[in-house]
Length: 115
Length: 112
Image (cartoon, rainbow over all chains, first blue to last red; front, side, top):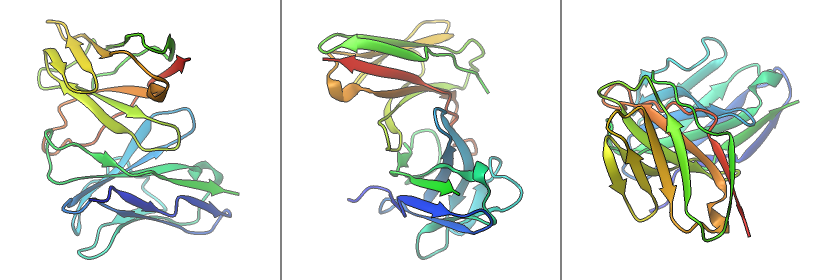
């Protein structure tokens, strides 16, 4: 059973461009979480999605950021008109069910660099 | 949310037992204590979770005193591969509150 997959692993964008980060959860997992990590800091929660629904987006910036998890295909985190401050590692995690007893399994991350 | 405080960094020699303590004075009744491990350029990995007293698995032990205001992650006989950042998380993480809140963690370096 393959783990959580994220692509690309590294992404370079110029200011003003769009960044699309993809996350394929583990097989059988219908819950996806996105986190952002700045250098030398811990991960910060962004958004929690279940198939076709956003459950909690309390950590998502109100502008330029959006996330989806369609019925078919990977979850997408989209950042429009990127700025230098968006440079970070973005991690996706998945779990089979909701609630405390369901461990979140993390992917290897996408490292976004904005020039 | 309960705030956690951990040492920024620790060094230890191979083969020793390492104990990392986390303070969480404002822990709530429904909160659990969870530890994650993160290697460089990788996502975090769950290590252990507990509510009170002691929990042990094949990787580590977690000691939680009766007042639950702190917890200690114990790694027996560490090796070089245990060099990583260790995060202490506190929260109920139950339905509707699944998001994990990470602090800055403890950077553990194992010395040969």
